[in-house]
Image 1 (cartoon, protein in one colour):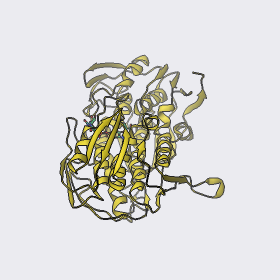
Image 2: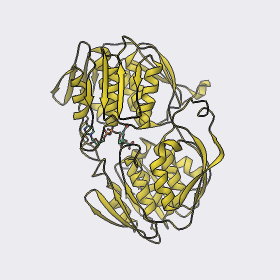
Image 3: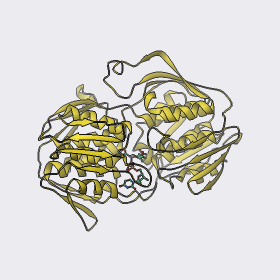
Image 4: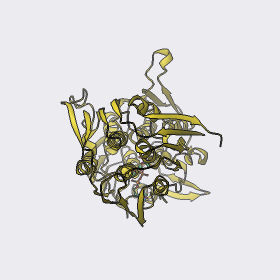
Length: 445
Ligand code: EPZ
């Protein structure tokens, strides 16, 4: 199993370019099940979760090909084509490796009339039910039952309806993606109320519209979808990864670095940038204009080349994670690492996944001063963190620990970077290019 060895204390300097968004790409790939024509996606990150989704789609009769650099192809371009519409089984062996496999449920049901998808179950960040996905599909007329750990869904043709997707912890991102993907081929009009407003939902709507779907309101809490009889192939550019961008901004800030970030979706990071400004970290546009493509309206959200500038003293702040456009839960661990070094007491409250605190015990091992009370953590800034062997079985928690290691005195070994590889494309290479002292090693299990 691989680990990162980080020798802290280097200021990061240089340029980094943000990759395509994992969480946008996964439902975009599943949307290829909605047509038998090819879907070409550009800017697809090279990650373990993407490979798992490609693998799942192959078992569902949908071929997925990445460009081969040896043959002059672009490894970030993926072409998907459903050539066999008979398979409907998303097997437990694949679903248990990646919860986002649930994204195939809506497309399979609406296009093939039936789906048998393993129930994803909980994971390291909480229980993660899928009741809202199922209730939404039932509202469109699907017959749903559970059989030996599988969701069995059937419908001759789904019928448009009004669907409320709000839950105890806000709306659901993948639930909105599933419902929207199902409703595009339903008979009549579907209105999703309390829809997730995340940029990844907007990106999916853009692809579906390019395939011939009729969708209004994506990015707002009410999405209206008029069903069509068929969809066709399309070419689509995946949006840049706002969470990867936020992680690199905080990596620059925690090392008091000077980093230029290309392809940074600033528009999608408003809440995070607001908190960071309070902390004393600011982004300055480098050329004052949106990146090529964004200016032409080809990518949404607006991207910029920005420079991270920070004052030496970090101010404490309050952070509450919320659905978009609020502060993203996927950046909570990273900002906690940063606030460990702020000048005073900060409070972090997790409102999306109240148990998403695997990094807390590990940061304590590095000398952080943290007190957790339910979904809230009191972070008392310390003068410095100290390196230690650490491990967290969650992708973003692991990212937080890498950031802590970059700033800590001494050596931090982040074990099981297997989790990081699910969501960051060669993170250690990008950080090394910025001057970090970080290497990947193989440790026997
Ligand atoms: C997506 O998960 C992301 N995953 C997560 O990123 C992200 O943390 C999360 O949205 C919140 O922003 C992908 O896009 C692949 P939700 P998703 O359904 O859609 C509750 C990462 O690190 N809920 O929006 O599965 C749920 O328990 C990952 O990249 C229900 O109660 O999350 C949570 O409290 C981790 N019933 C809240 O809603 C449901 O049916 C939001 O979850 C569904 C969700």
